[in-house]
Length: 321
Image 1 (cartoon, rainbow, N blue to C red):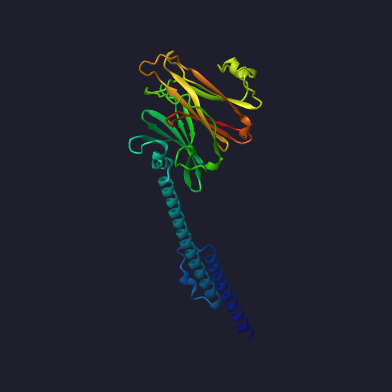
Image 2 (cartoon, one colour):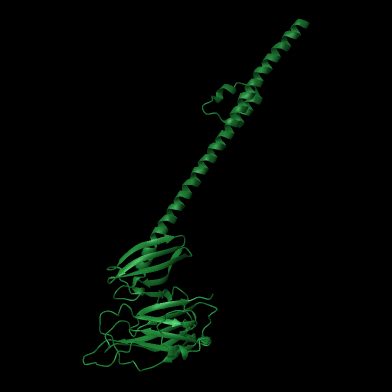
């Protein structure tokens, strides 16, 4: 009897060891999810092993489901990136400049447009218009490109220009100052009869502003000493215009009007080239002193020089130190 009992115990121990081994296999499947492992081998095991196998199968299904969701998310991200890339390309700086060409005196059909530089949120587009090269500066803001400045490159026949986009009629890409702040601070009709009939201005025609006596800094400004002596730079600033290298008769340049618009000045100059029978002496330069206290030099001050035809000749921006 005792022998029989012992034999039964040995058989039970062997059976228990087989069950434990099967449970160990099921555990490996549920954690490592070995590919190709025949799950059916453990289904014949006792109930506890079968439950472990079922858990392994559930975990595998869940993992496959997670992988499918991850693929969907990747596909959605790729689609969104593609849309952003398409939108970026559709709203490229070149296309923005072409779309607004007429506002700035360009021709979207005949002129040449090309991307000169693009770094971060800034870009520069090169425009060739009527033989002259312009650089159009843009900034990226609010998901789109905004034109900020148009720079004309000077050459033998044309002076360099620097014009904020807000100076162009209808541009309104930089908030305009209220018209109520605009007032004329100087005007003369002495040059009303003048006109320029030549195709180009002299290459060395210049316009400028002096906020201090250039003699104190050793600067050779070519401004006559009498003009400098008559300017109180503690309260005044000096505007000047020079016609450049021309014949001694028939030419001229004069400051005709100055308009203040908030903290900006627009200086209108009139020019003349020889007319038939004109033997008058060339007026080579002109100077004008203005009260500098009308402007807030703690903020940027823009001074634009334009001719009688509305062409911006040059723009200066004075920034506080």
